[in-house]
Image (cartoon, rainbow, N blue to C red; front, top):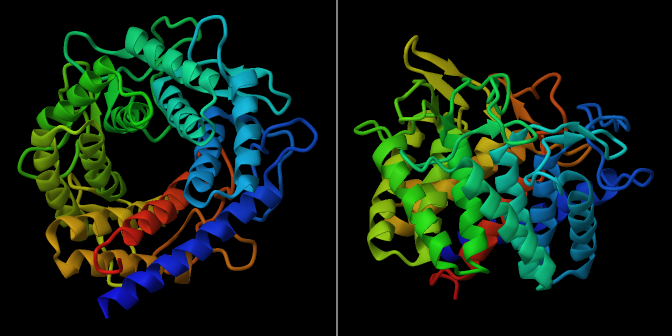
Length: 403
């Protein structure tokens, strides 16, 4: 029974990975200006003059590179090459270092703010593309971006990474990734994805100093970010790690549950591996509080006024599928595998856009798609859902039950 469940899960995810990437191959290349379209609205209309975001493009690069690395399909590598060339030509700041937040549809810099989150995803994508191609110049750029992040953003006194800077790396007033964020010097989100980027870079460039930075990041999560006793993460901090929010993000908690452990495993730190196995189970168990009876994972909870944000976003479901599966692998407790499978069933039923392709941004309490949300945009990308498919395909393929 278990073997059949896992094989079915893998087969369905393999088909879904193909479907997701077909959508991006068909709808997003910008045949006139180069690179990829910056926005497709919920109605499926491509906005040709929309700005192009560095995060979106870096995530496209990672997705097609990772798909090639999984399948060996050279067609995916062709589109990864296109993404790499566009990022290197238009988003990398050759004068001051780092990555622009956005360019306009013609590739002219639009928002030159140096958001460390964007640099992290560019490193992440370049490392994956290097894994696919072994082109030395790609690795050189990734290392240069990493060194810039260390030089400009690392808090030498308190640890962790500051959020954002001006084009020339001077201080700025607005540090936020998005309007919904708290305007503070450090966030869980940026530090998590710096960790993810550094880990992917280390997997193809095992540098001693890089390993130490990864280890320090993991300790920051243990010491500051994972809230003691509550088994969830604080989202925002000042420079000395004093909490500046109480919001519980179910999606970020389940995402961190497996990314933190993966980072510890990549650097081979035995003590950290054991610690983050425990942390993974705690975070996954607490995230299950946010599971609805339909199998979907809610977005956020505000404990101060006991308000549940009842939306179910696409990326939260993708991370839940992987995070709960990871918890099952650690514990062998079927409640976690069931949660992963049920979340996938929910996603198939309500999140997949069966008419136009790809995934809806999310659904509301009545399961209808959320209004006014892009299909492609600064934040709507192929990263979370392709990564969930790829990660689970790999994990199932090496599981002893089906070998």
